[in-house]
Structures are given as structure tokens and as C-alpha cells.
Amino acid sequence: MENNKKTVLITGSSRGIGAASAMALAREGFSVIALLAQKDNEGLKKVQTAIESGFPNTRVIRYLGDVSDEAFVEQLSKDFLEKEGRLDVLVNNAAISHVGLLQDMSLSEWHRIMEVNLTSVFLTSRAFIPSMLQNGGGRIINISSMWGSVGASCEVAYSATKGGVEALTKALAKELARSSIAVNAIAPGVVDTVMNDNLSIEEKKTLSDEIPFGRFAEASEVAELVRYLSIAPYYLTGQVIGIDGGFI
Image 1 (cartoon, rainbow, N blue to C red):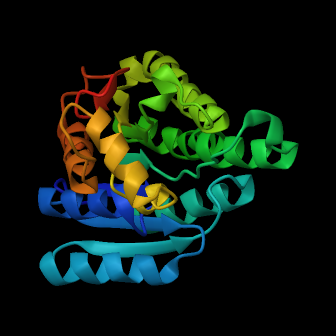
Image 2 (image 1 turned 135 degrees about the vertical axis):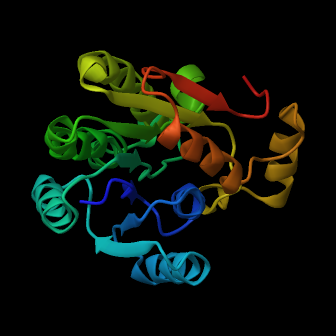
């Protein structure tokens, strides 16, 4: 195992914050980047091509699967660790949204958003923590949302999952601190990604006007914070770091 080998796995990385984070970590010099999406293999291929054409020393691995499925996550960790020997950074970015009144939400919709947004963080963390312990440290970076702190009308379930991610982050950081495994979360505000494509042009303009910075965040701006946390001192742990243009 080369001393300078750095590996990362990013869930939900076929587009948006996940894809931008993969590019940022390639620029940082990570030698192995594992991309993961549930179905969007074409999106993963585009990210892989962009990384390999710009950073020939970085090797990209693609995985397709549901990070809320225990069997898949266990097989994923087994496959990755057998091939690479270690995971230095885990970025939990996979998430789905649900917009609508709580009273109109079905139980199956509630369970699904909980599984994808919160249970997946438990599953991936549990799967890779033993390897991080064995290798003397690591970093877990969870992507939350400002709505996890303050809540959003008509996004109750999404807000609840992100609040759970933040509580999980703080508790797990305390649990792992003496093992040199830093656990932090990033809480973006409104980001210009596909997740906000349900908004009309007028709605986007109204929302932008409410943000002190006057615009949505770019995915690349959030990715720069992911990059920083991937190399930050291990003593920086248990934090939920907002990047919302002054919104909250």
C-alpha cells in the first residue's frame, strides 16, 4: 500500500454536489475515487470521463445500487476493500426530496425518504468504520441541509431526515474521536441542482431574493467544502457547517 494513496467513496455522485465533489477531490490528488448512484450509470460515466481526462493519475470506480439496501452496502464495502485495502474518506451525499403537505404523504413515501436519506448513512458508515479503525483513521462527511436545522414547510419528511443526519453526525463523532475518525456534516442552503428543478423560474427568482447572497449556491462551492473537510485536521469533528449564503 502506497503511503500517498488516498481513496474516497461518494454516494449519489452522478450529478450535482456528488459529481462536483468527485472533481474537487480529483484536483486534491485522490488516487482512487469510487462513484455510486442507484441507476444513473450514464451520469457516472460522464463524471468518470471528466476525471480521467483531466486527472490521469486518478482511477475511478463506478458502482450502481441502492445505498438504503443493507445487502448491497455490505457487498459494496467488501468489494471495495478487497480491491483497495482501505477507505480514507466516505462522503454520504445520496438523498431524495419530497415536496407536499404532510397529511398527503403516504407511509411508503415516508419510509422511502427515511431509508435513502438517513438509513443509508447508518449503513455505509457501519460498513466502512471497521476498516478505518484498522487503518488508524478516516473521515466521514455527511451532506445535510439547512432545513435539517430550521425545517421547511411542505418538506417535513426531508427536513426530518436531515435533522437526523446532523444528530447522527454529532453523536458518531464523539464515538469515534479517539480513533482518529473525523465525522462532520455540511448543511447547504439552496443549491442549483436538479433537485430544485421542480421550482418555476418565478419561484426560483423569489427564493433567490430571500437569500442575502442573492443567488443559489453552485454545487462546486459545496464541493470545495467537501474537499477541505477531506484534508482538515482530525480535531475538526462533530461539526455541522452551513454554506447557505447567509440564509439562516
